[in-house]
Structures are given as structure tokens and as C-alpha cells.
Image (cartoon, rainbow over all chains, first blue to last red; front, side, top):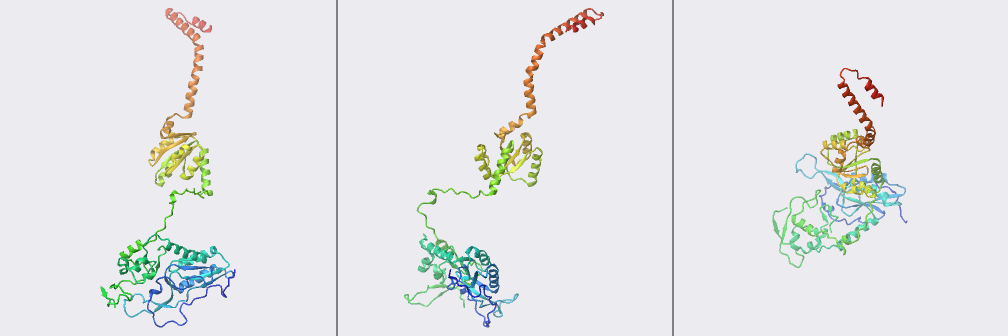
Length: 212
Length: 259
């Protein structure tokens, strides 16, 4: 019902290295892994997708795996798939094996994309049911470097609603954000300033689903 | 660069968003790590305190009427096993229920071999299935026996003596009870049953006891004539003893021909 198929139904090939490779080596900046995602959190074209429940880096190997698995398991005539992450653009360096510390920063090893928790990695749509799509999406989700689940528009809405309900009907009068914001018992000595925003649901790159 | 110990920040007016007076500069691993970074104990305590507490329902679930969950376990496998157990109960004359403690495999095989020689089969049964079958059949009193691991020793003839002998040699199997010829016996009952003589011997005994009277009647009837014969024989012997030397053939021949 009113589904517009894109031109190419299969997933686009992603380059290993961007067209203009970066010469300047970038600092690590792990804050692009930490915390909730601000982009690609909702569906655009498709009906089903893979939701990341943790932060991590996706490199070209992951992209190929996703592209080939989904391309192999879906029917290009009735279904289409769309990327929701950009091609790898962040250079990650690695020192050659067996060398001591020092001697400068290592050369660029590979390019990655940063994914935060709550972001959709890819979307699938078309004339298909969730049951058809779920098997290969779970297969793909298991192979990603962060925990991921296949979702549909409904299931994502359900998840958000449940989270909201949990937050509202929590019987515990003490919540992390309350304690952190009011600095009760001097807790901010042991918390990071980011914890005011992360509210105890995130720790490093991990997303704690059962909190709050 | 990173400095060790607390740093005092310059005095800022309290109204314009104050920073904490003491800021510990952390060293060690970064905030985002591949492994699960160990939390400070105070933070662990905070996480434990601020966990989600589910709202309690107004009526506790144990006060609500319990819906009988119909187990969908009535799949074909369970039905097949039930049919097998019913067949076992129908076909065999003797069924003994024993407790089974784990035995080494070779001992199990040996025991099965000995019992098979006497036509006794060993069956491992699942309690749930047997309980279902028994509650519907007439063997309701066997129900309390089927708790924990059991085996059934079934046979067509009731060879209790051999079974007991074999089971005595195996300490890990304890006889709990038996159903022999549709009578439920306890352990004592089985032992008594084993002590009974075999069927042929019992039959022979009853036949002998019954035939005792008819055999006595014939001797009763013949008692008069036998008595007379004995008396005459005695008389002849006395006469012979009196007439030493004279031929005693004609009188005994005459007396015997008279009968």
C-alpha cells in the first residue's frame, strides 16, 4: 500500500576507503560510540530494520557481510533494502605488530563508521511480512560487533512505549537521574558529567536495556 | 597533562553554574572500552539502588483463581508411550516396580541378561506418563510408588524366586511393590509369594490331597477280605509250624483258591 521502491532494490556497495582518503590521522574520539544515537533512529523507507543496541565501529568486512547476506536472502523483485549508515569514513590507525610503544602514531589501518545505540543500521521493505524477513535479519544482527535486534515499525514503537511506561510506573522513588542531578550524597564524585545526560542507561559503549 | 590528586578550581560565583570544588582527575583506561569497565563501588551501589521496581498488582496473583494450564504435551510421543505402558500392563502377568539408583552400565546389561534368561524384561518408564495411565486404569494403588527413578520388571509367568535372587545380587535396585496376577503385593507379599511352591508342585499336592479319600475307600472296602486273608494265612502258618515235615501245599492252595 503506497510503497515506493527505490531504483536499485539491493544494498549499495560500500567502499573500503573513501574516494578521498584522509591523510591527516584523526584522534580516536570514542565519544562517537558513547551514548544514544541522534540520527537514523526512526524508519524512513522500509518497514523492517536492524536496530543497534550498543555502540561500535562497522568496517568494510561488516558492510560486505550485511550486503551479501541480505542480498542473498531477499527477493529483489518484491523487497528492497536501504542503508542507514554511511560508508566508512573515519580512519583508524594500528601500530605494526611486535613494536614497542612510542615512535609516533601508527599508519591508517582501515576506515570505519561509528554507530551509537538506538541507530538503525539498515532497512528492508516491500511486499513482505516480518516473519519472512526476521530470520536473515537476526542472522545479520548476530554477526555485528555490537548487540542488535531486527525490528519492524510496530515493534520499535512497542519498544519505545514499553520503555516510556517503565519509566512512568517505576515504583522506586530514587532514580539515577534524580540522584545525579541533585548530587545526592555527593554521587557526582563518582559519576561523569556525561552521566547527567546518559542517566545510567549507558556505560561505555554498552546500552543497559533493563535499566529504568 | 594529567596530574595526580585533587585540583582546586578557581573560585567562581555560586550563581553561575558551579563546578564541584574537588575534581579527581582519573587515570587508567578511557571512558569507552571494549571490555566492561569496572564501576566504582559507590557507582555500583547507586546502580543497585536505582533499579527498576515493577508495580505490584492490586490483587496478588496467588489469590486469583488459577487457570489450569492444559499441557500441550499431549503430542504423539507422549501418547505412544502411554499406549506402550497400557500394553505392558495388559500383556504381562507379573509387574514389579523397583527403585533404580544409578548403576554402572555393564551391571545394568548383566542384570538384564540374567533376567532375560528367566523371561523377565526390564523397562524404564517416565513417571508422568505412568501416572496418567494408572490414574485412568484400575491400578490406582500403584500410584504412590511412582516417585523418583523407577524401572518395571515385567514377565508373563510369575517367576518371583528367580527375580528376587537376581535382585539380591544387585544392591542398587530395591523392590518397592509388585502386581502379580492383578493382585497388588508389597515387598513382603512378593517374598511370601516366592516362598510358595511352584504351580506343578501345588497342583500335585492338591491332587494328592483330593485323591487320598478315594484311595482310602478302596482299601476300606477291601479291608474285610484282606483281614480274612491275613487271618487264614496266619492260621496256615500256625498249622505248618505244628505239622513240621508234612507237605503244607494242599491246604494253602485250597485256601487261596477259595477267594
